[in-house]
Image 1 (cartoon, rainbow, N blue to C red):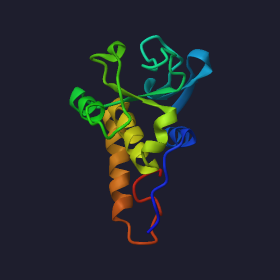
Image 2: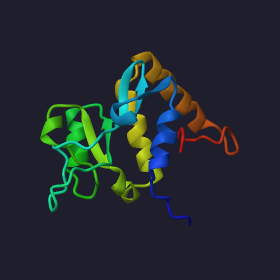
Image 3: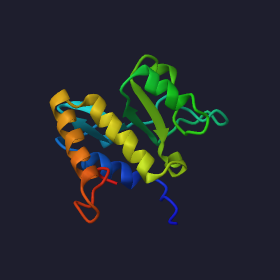
Image 4: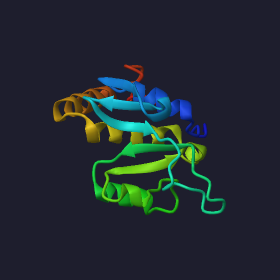
Length: 154
């Protein structure tokens, strides 16, 4: 059995760019911001004073922000010590989770894809979200050798 491949930064870009109706705009320090319908769903954050190494006090320079559907989803992700997701007081009440790029290898590419898909769904219009989910269901139902994309990009 093949072991699942760990996620990489290139996967974040590939999966986010592969979602429908996505535009990429430059954020601060030209970090990419992935948007759907003009709404950000994934972005790369520049170093900020609220996200620092607890041992050195150095600002993290590799924080990625992913939108989530609800506060309950956020708490489930950041509250599970088995995951690398976190938040900071700056993001209190904001429907997003943070992940350091240096910790992407702690999740699989498939797990990352699901986080990106959920982020996209949290920000896409209802019509776009329903259309994408409907297409995924059709692909999942395709017989072996069908479209080859059983769970979206991934």
